[in-house]
Image (tube, rainbow, N blue to C red; front, side, top):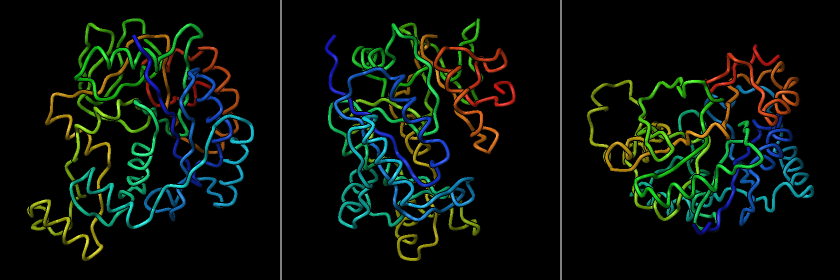
Length: 313
C-alpha cells in the first residue's frame, strides 16, 4: 500500500488557552506520523454562542503567543489565521453549500467557515483534524492514521475514519447514542459524523458536496415549513437565523448517500473527550495525559467516549 501525503490541522481559539499547551503537543506526539504539514488554524472571530461562557477565555494576543511558542518548539510547522474575507467566504460556501450564507459560525459558536477553511487549504491527499481538547492513546507499534488510510483505500464507501471512541472493553462494545454496525474489515460504520476527530480523503469528501443547509428551528412554526432555499435568502437579508451544526449537515448527507463514517475497532488506539474543562480538570490534565499515553485508564472509562473525570483523579 502506498501512504499518500497527509496534513494535520488543529483549530484553536481563545477558549482553548487553559489546556492547549498540554493537549496539542500530546496529540502531535501520539500521532507519530510524518505529516506533510502540521498546522494550527487560528479563529480570530469574536466569540458567540456557548463559547462566550467557557472558563479561562483569554485574549487574542495570548493565543498568538501560545501558537508562536508551539511553532518555535517544533510542535507545528505553521500557524495561519482563518480567512474571513468576503470573497473567500462566498467562494467556499458556494462550493460546500451551493449558496451564499452570511454566517461564519453555527448557533453554538462553532467555526463552520474555519472547518471548511482547513479542509480546503490542507496540502496533500488526506487531511487529519483534531479538536484541540482531545486525548489520544496509541501503542508504539501502531499508526491509526496509516491504518485508516489503508482502510479508506480498500473501502470506497468510507468517507471519514477515526480511532476507537473510548478505551476498549473486553467484549468490544461501545456506549454510543447513535446506531452502528461492525464491518468485518476492521471498523465500525456510522451514518452520524463527528467533527472532533476525522481523517478524510479530500477528493472523496468533495463528492459529498454541496451539503444540505440546515437552520435551527424558528419560533414561528410557519417559518419552519418554508423551503430551505427561501429560509437561507430570508436569513441572509434579516440576519436573524442560526445555522445548525456542520457535523449534522454532514450526517444528513451520509444518510442520503452510500458513504459512512468509520471507527477503527483496533484496541491499539483510542480517544477520550473531556466535557468538563473546569479548574479540577485543568489541574489534573498533565497527570491524565501521562496515564493516557501509557495506555492506563480506570475500568469505569472503558467504552465511554466522554472523559469520566472523577475516576481519573
